Length: 420
Ligand SMILES: [Zn+2]
Image 1 (cartoon, helix red, strand yellow):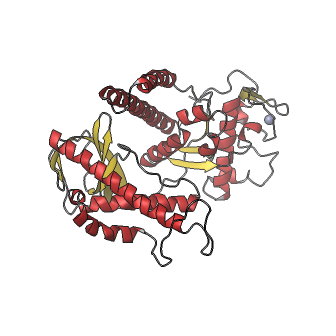
Image 2 (cartoon, protein in one colour):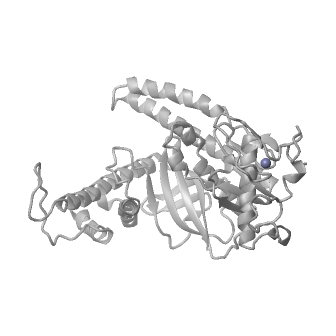
Image 3 (cartoon, helix red, strand yellow):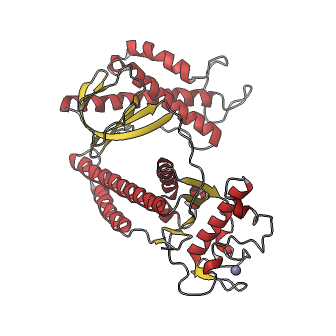
């Protein structure tokens, strides 16, 4: 099964726009209501049955069932009779909205953090139409239940043979978007490792460096955009809440946020394609960037959005039939890629120079080469890589060499340049 998400801009009429905004509001209040039920149930079970907490006590009968997804979903028709507003929204949209809360709740239970929160005014920004019997796409328009036809800009056509499964309508500062999930009943084989392999090291000083010596500096315009955002945010903070000018300033801030996110995404897609142009097999570090973002360089890490880049790179590589794998990241920057001994480096040391084999190269390129070594080792042990290298991986860590860096092992200024 092949699933893809395509995002398009849609242009609802004024009436349709108002309706959609109202639906978002209704969904928000039903989300909050369902969350309240869940929270009440939890707080009524907080203390033991024979004692009370000192401050307050929430009492619910012991056999009162847990407000699970199915129960809350089944309550919707009853609630509709009481609140006629609910009936204006398509039933399935309301159901998936409740589903969303329970997904968040399940997620919280497995991870142990991220309890679902109440959504403030305007914080619920999307609704999902979960299924369509016939294709809702009619020419340059899209047909949604209880809304009718909406103009859509099909800047790229939906590929032949794909079926539309779901549509998510999203409200952004620039207007409305529709994310269309399409599906094709076909099995796509996973790419296999082959050809030229590279390791990629991600970092803050340089956005990325590859084992071939390619270095991407990262772009400066992010910091420029960030300072612009700061100005807008400062202006917003001086406005009175719930006034017309506050809303205008808020929209500007939101637009800026979206703009930054899109620019970054665009940059990352182009970079991913660049990497795929350079190699057929790509190795990455398996760093958990979320823990990295908690460190002292947190803000910069978040700005670089490495996790998103990894996802994008995997997607681009998959669509181009290139192989991507992650390797153990521990100590990649402290190992000589040529002779594999440990070479201690501080964060400030930007140059790798091995005292053992006199291999010299840029620090980040060195760790990228080490990542590539580890990747090939990993594939060798799995028997996925060519036979000639298998002889090397016999656990002779000191003698281990792949002949790859040996060619450039002499200390010279030629080292680190990409192979033509
Ligand atoms: Zn060395």
